[in-house]
Image 1 (cartoon, each protein chain N blue to C red):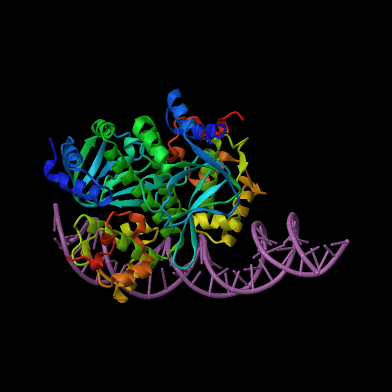
Image 2: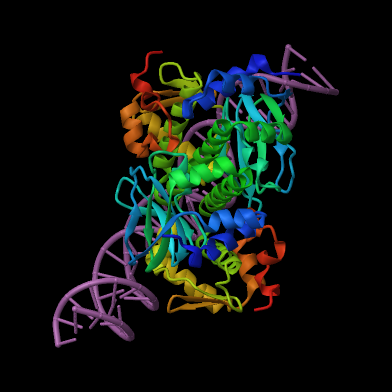
Length: 252
Length: 252
DNA sequence: CGATACGTTGACGGAAATCAACCCCGGTGG
DNA sequence: CCACCGGGGTTGATTTCCGTCAACGTATCG
């Protein structure tokens, strides 16, 4: 089965970070992929697994996580439409983190073999995928700075800015608003905070007129203010088009 | 100038994570590189730079960092002999972090052009370098978990374990001891802790008989104990040889 | 010799965790 | 139909880990 009808989201994502010729787009579109619908709160791969395929998020929210000694969970990154949560498995045999769905998801699976042979034929696609994995790493480094140096309010503001920009790239932001279906406990696991403290910080952000957040929906009310509180600089997302990093300037 | 006499450290590092044929090793050894000695506490590249070359650490300690709003610094990773601290610049135009020396260093610079043309000629080298950058990302994710979920003592213990394994791979560990020339303030910037608290935690780790640390030298006294306190699992380093991840079992 | 960097110690304060309720709401099943 | 339940959100009281401030010791170096 070919996932042609879904491939636009992958293409759109790759094109936001690299240039593709029309033949390259065709090569990506005709990649054999296997589209699957997965319910919420399911593991896609687990720590220790040795996947033989990579997964593309077509719809829904996916996250990667690590469990530490006392059972606490750290969410290490969030993945949205167009992202490749386990691209690393193409070159790292065993998974050092788990990957799961936060919401019902539509996922496309592409075998390592198909990806590898495409990469051998086309350096520019190799480079684009390599670049995608480097951006993933850049996001992880930004999270290190976020967790290591910023206070709770700032961390959450930074995360909201990141998600607005990343979701904007794939057309999931309208007028500074987007779906963001994380529970407060999941925000806590992502930002290294307790649920209770997340709740209080959200109230402060709401009270300051920066955001509204309810029913899994984020609405940014003051983009510049939120950026300032979150100390957000979109450089680390390495978008080709810098305008995409200033969602408040984009037409909707 | 060819850096043949230094290339063994790069080869050794790449071989610890991927297989190389002798032609591939030759290709790496004959890569045109420019060897430079740099004093301690110098920036190699700064946030916002657009490098045209990548740097290989031959000797010394290098780190990457980010400065956040109020001037605080987060050290995002440490790099030792064999590491490529700014490999990302091969595919990401502008640096989103700075890179600096902690000690006097010997560095080899390789132009992006040379690296790119080598990659075009040889997929296996491309894949090995890609793999190196994915391991970098895996380390960053592990740091996210470290900063987000572990307490101060545990974070430091985890860092010590990581450095023992990574330095062991390039032959810089003898009998569970290595150079680790970070000041307590630098440990703090790396682990998101204040200098004072680093100091107190180090005393606890020393008091518990797990390590001794002085004069820029780390001696692990109880590897299993340190691993336990640090909740350390070397999977995330993705070494080819699992024995290298258990330094206490290795002959010295 | 003073200057400076690094390490150490004590006192104090604060950000965030923990503990424990309680509310609201949608689902479900007796 | 309504009682019950569980998940998510909210709140207050209390605790704890860690940061900040400030002082002091020690070693190195120009």
